[in-house]
Length: 306
Length: 225
Image (cartoon, rainbow over all chains, first blue to last red; front, side):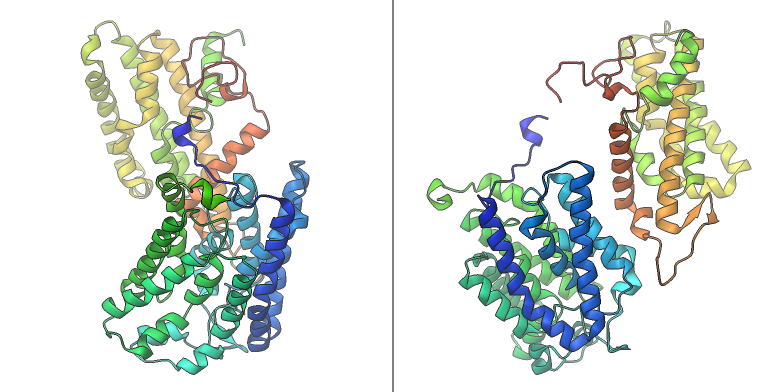
């Protein structure tokens, strides 16, 4: 292959031990969201998340065994992918969805590109996109205790105002991990303290998004409307756990600012002008594809890398 | 293989399969293989055009001036495509409708122009016909396999017959019948073909004749791979 076709993915995390520690931190950071999902959605949430984690871990194991690769399973990356995927699914989704999603995320998005660290797209989100296109009805039917109701974003799109306090605590409808803003924030703060997250990207992401919905949302800088946009849907979850990803992120700080701004811009465009209420998945996936380009024109300086 | 005619057919069918080895004609391949029937229809109509155009171009190869050979090929191919287009509209109307624009687009199909340029313009009429049959069969078989896999995974049917229905246990993965699925399935099948080391130009089995760079990557020694 000629060099012009080769996309460089830098070894952003240097040692296996470092990687395992990061993954362990990610798992801990996701615990509040998992616990809240279990409390709010009940047993079905635990079922979906468990199946999703198992699917990711087993797919990686089977792939490694079949291709006689070195076992990467011990470092816990597959568990994190499984958790991230499970948390983006609705509670009452049939179990073939997390199984297929986990297999797709692990094998197609990660393993075929050379394993964790070499993938260029967030595996959990790519799988979610795959599932959403394939199984539109199960993926957009949100229920709490078997009763389906509109998600806050659907309420917002219909022109009404959802209750902000409920959204902050998380007693609303939606995907498993996205409902409780407080649980997400606790996880994110933990990641920041443990230095297991990029901080620039999420901050710019939120800022640009708030500015965008404020200017183009049609409600001006109405705190209720902006609050609902920020707290609703997968935006906060995405900002805290996807935009802060250490691998899928430009290395250069200016690159991170650009990446975060693009994320905010696209999410804003999709939210305010798109036909479906929630499109964070697509916004992030599109921006993922731009990272190699950003890295190419804004290479990291030696000082920053050290 | 001793018989050179059979060898030319075998070459197109397996060793230089236009889809899985040469990766030619990707546009119709990705677009129409939503079902096995569509794939077969596309494959057969392309085969007919390919055989006829290969023969006519081989017959005219000494008359066509080098400088205008591309326009000449296009005129020849377009003539046959128009014929096939009208015949399909008359006799297989539903297939004609589901293939739509892709029948006229056979005119600019890479396989047809590629074979005209690489083979028919240098070989006899009978050999070119055999090459057309081989390439056409290879294309058809590949499209049917692709269509079958996509149909089975994406809609739960095979040749239009329902194999399984959507249920609580499993549901057809509808993305497979959409555009991204075409890329996924094609990549998977090509990977499988490579993994199984099926005898093909890219797996290091040289056909023994001059085939240019698209042929034997393992023993070519070029820097492209």
